[in-house]
Image 1 (cartoon, one colour):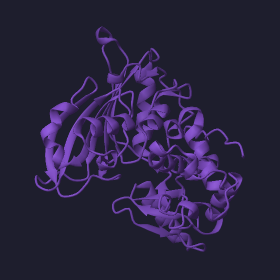
Image 2 (image 1 turned 45 degrees about the vertical axis):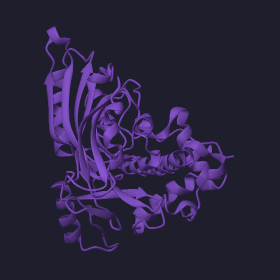
Image 3 (image 1 turned 135 degrees about the horizontal axis):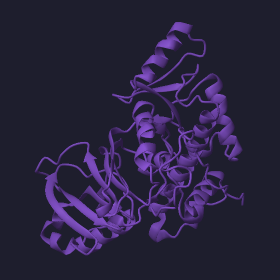
Image 4 (image 1 turned 135 degrees about the vertical axis):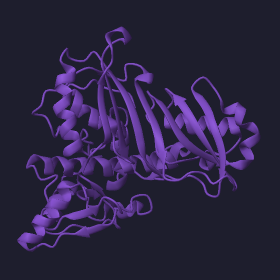
Length: 366
């Protein structure tokens, strides 16, 4: 079997500025996440939406805990997105309304049900606007506040690489290795233990897509074009999410106008989440993306093996945080920096924080 390479490490976009240093996730309470739902439960229907707070509990463990204590199947538990383990997170989870009488049983040392309301449909992946983060960095440089100011200014004005975080790839990159092996035909889903097959196969294939995106992003960062419109690029309209392809032979004025829209954060240059239904670029962007896929020893039809799980999509190369604020924690409270911001669904806070901390970001738990 072809050995799985280490995940592609995406460089900092603002690496010319010194980071503030410090430790991330020294305590679970140092990393707080509040989910912003795409919609509120309407108050009636066969599904029960639970607003849950979990502390130092993984996404998979939360699903298993709720299924066991509420007497429902794991497949009946719906979530909009996976949340970090070493953190205090609040999110919506859906279960069948038949579990309503057993809600008290779900409360434990690491899980607390804060609210329960009925809705007409099960909660599914992607049913959220994004997440609000409230993060504390400990042990920062003495002049951390001074260092943080220009980085925060750039993050708000330009953004940061919309890379997938290392936690996506599993312990010792095992999740990524499985995903690549499945896509190459070196393994089948029958090689995955039946008890966790559906969860792990989906996660592994997503990890492979994520690493290929990171590789394409790294390529575009290498020549400074992650935020520069090239002929043939697939663009995304920020507001609607709609996609369109820049002509291979655009008028010079049209290319300049499209770049103005990118600079105003109205549109974004996108990279590939490979799959048969992915909107394809043209010209040089198409050649560059194909070269990344080929370097991973994946033929063009690799993602058709699991077409339902890897239909394909596009993802912006750069993303800008909203409401970014960096403040100093008083020494009498332990010192450090407090960083608060909003990110759209699918963007990683740890990647933004690496821009702030610097290249020596401590290893963090997922």
